[in-house]
Image 1 (tube, helix red, strand yellow):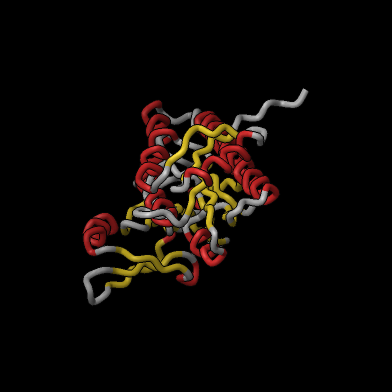
Image 2 (cartoon, rainbow, N blue to C red):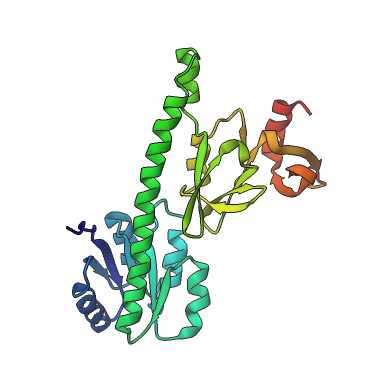
Length: 273
């Protein structure tokens, strides 16, 4: 017997009632899709996304007031971000759509085959997110078991608070990195990346604040609003005329990140330089 798949909870956003009706008709005849609501403008869309947490949003680009691209940019600052498929009558919007991390864009009138392709992409994302959550739970269990050796209860309790491994994406794979491998962590266009000598990998975390709370503060240090450095990877700190600093990390000083003036004062005390 085939396992039942969880329906993709979907929101339709378009200022044209006829366009919403036509898309709803197609979606309601698509397996594994549940249309949970509609919005006729960008402001209403943002409110419903925050309140309803849809898995997938079909988002019209050309809307009066807050358009679809502005809605997507606003979502980059939110802790919850659904998969977005843009709807547009103009193909020149494609580049802008992918700059805000849309999974696809559909030209109006919507072709059923292209719609099916977009839904399949959303399905893969949903399944991958479930796998990530399950993997994170498994890693947490394994870490707690590994930390249950001869340390005192106090030390085990302190160690268990912090991540020892971080799961990251590489194409269609999930890699598991030791935190010791991570040179620094950064946020770019709303995505949190872990950077190692092997490259830059997107993580599952929604913000730097979220991942910072999970990392050992004795090892990882917030150097800037967009960066967290592994103190063990720092090779050199260069003062700049502005009062800020540059940090060089890794062998051959291959990586450079900023150190703000305020964080530089704190790090001076910590590293005694």
